[in-house]
Length: 95
Image (cartoon, rainbow, N blue to C red; front, side, top):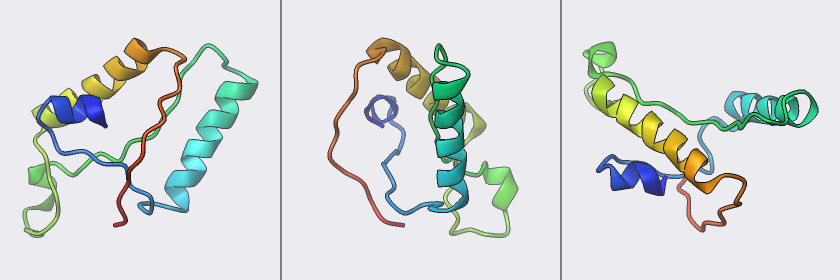
């Protein structure tokens, strides 16, 4: 989140977004990393809609494809930079 914000993009930890399907996907990815792919890093991000996807829903949060790419690159860069270091951060929002 911090690396994405450093790029000037909005980002936050969500404590409630997608608490069923998204959590299932995250835990499944972590399980596979632990059991079959220990050299792989796994994570989960919600990616906002692109503006073109929600032209009829003006209150839906959006981001340009260029900024989505910048955010993903910043997140991956942070994973590489911090390696196996566990970052303990306080924060989060409810949505």
